[in-house]
Amino acid sequence: MQLHSEDPRLTAYVLGELEPEEAAAVELAVAADASLQAKVAEMKGIQQFLTERLVQPADKLLPRQRENIRRSARRADSGTKVIPFASLRGWLIPAAAAAALALATFIVIRMPSDKPLPTTSAKPAPPEISQAPAPVAPPAPAPPAWFPPDTAAAPPALDLPISSARDNLAVISQWVHEDRRLPPPQDIRLEEILNNFALRLHGVSAIARAPANTWHPDERANAMTSHIATVSTEMIPCPWKPSATLLLISIRGNDQKDCDVKISFHPDLANVFRYRLLGFQPVEGSPPGNLPAKLPANSVTTLALVVEPSTPAGNLGSLEWSADDKPAPAISLARKSDAEPSDDARFAGLVCTYAEWLAAGQEGVIDAEIVAALAREIASTTLAPDRADFLNLIDRSLNL
Amino acid sequence: MPDASENFPNVPAVPSVDHGNPTCPLTWEKFIGQAMADYESPLIGYASTILNDIDLARDVVQDTFIRLCQQDIAKVRHGLKSWLFTVCRNRALDILRKNKRIQPLEDIQWREIAGPDLQPDEQADRKEISSRLETYLDRLSPNQREVIILKFQQGLSYQEIREITGLKTGNVGFLIHTGLKRLRDILPDDVRL
Image 1 (cartoon, rainbow over the protein chains, first blue to last red):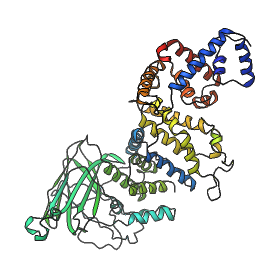
Image 2 (cartoon, each protein chain N blue to C red):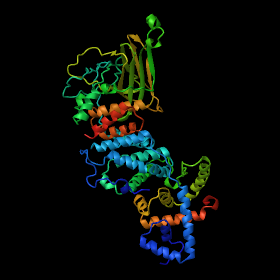
Image 3 (cartoon, rainbow over the protein chains, first blue to last red):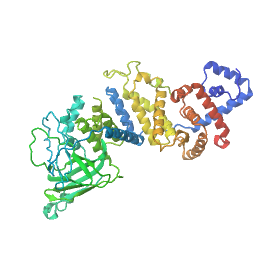
Image 4 (cartoon, rainbow over the protein chains, first blue to last red):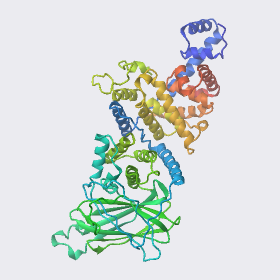
């Protein structure tokens, strides 16, 4: 074999990459040539140097990442198809956001024009709500309850119902996990699903407190007894229609006492085109009458409204409310374009999107891809067990 | 680096996993556990050299293993190491392409590559040498740099590097040969000693 000192086979020989016959031939050539021997010695020196210096790092995955992988492995063992939510905190967030944005853009382009319901009253009829557990629903879902402000009449308002029911999530879980079918659209109660999660919203909040002179002498030392209810809000872009705002309202009652909370949304006519309360579809058999206002002790309920603005900025209106018939501080709904949505608000957005997808409330607008994209985004954060279970429910639902 | 097929001597040929059979000797959980034990750190190290970000590298490696769960064990077990590095590399390069905030492949800055099991003074010495070595590695072409890392940091064979990078085996050998020659020419003696 003829070799020169810069032949790549010499490097391959030093690195043990040659077949035995070729290695033997190189070895013979090297043995017969002092310059090749010197080159081989030099090559071995650089090989040793690099091997020692390019030491393998000992970095490990984080515990939650290892658990995510094990969970995927267990799913594979159980024969379940895995959708890789891939909680890739750093890079998947922008990727998922980009995907969601692309989907949302597509949705906006093909979104059918929602025709507002004809409204003759300045104050739209309050939606009827379901009783928990949900009774048998009518075969046809209710039409979307859009409430356009009526500028010809007195300023409109939408009274909001208070419901602490939360059983519907268990019903959906049974359909998906045990019956392996998606529940009928009319069985979906968004408001009950939201109530399963303790959401801490990062927008404007207001607290209703009882006057001190109403306190029982034994309770005066306990400041918590003055608290009747707290209303917290946060506004985020609507996940399936980014030009709209998803207004989230969380109402927390006293830890020990029931209270009555009456709350209404007063849109700013200059900035709001129309709005809609999500969930609370009319259910056959539910009696007409006043909206429920009872908030049981130690409970939280969350409401979600889609508000379509008519201007790019400005106040969307206000929330006026009372607790135990005592007026509480109104909440101004000022939009902040640079506000970063809180994790809880993003999770609530996912809940709303999933429920609307199941309920076919936005048929043709929300599809499985947008639900999956949002779920991936949520999966990129550290999740409480109940939220992780909810993502598993979505995962299962998307595979049915 | 052990061969993947040696790590999983009990892996059945076909089917990969008998989901309903409790006597099946291999479950995905065991398979993934063994794969993670063998390749978790090497993959993170490799992804870190591409992404220059340990958190992103961990995310990529997590996604790589989750993707592994979606494969047929029978199809990947014999070339597991190459499969893992290939998927890891592709995912990392995807991120580089998609995330413009991260430097392109040509401008990769080498992260610290000194070992963790050294005494503080040794670590300091190696850190300095490694830092200087990074400077010289950065003067190689991206292809030369990558194959040298895969060869000397990850201990992969020419064949495995070919499978991961898509280069021809001859090209791998040539790139390593020319890369080493270039390093010999530019590395000062005080770095090599």
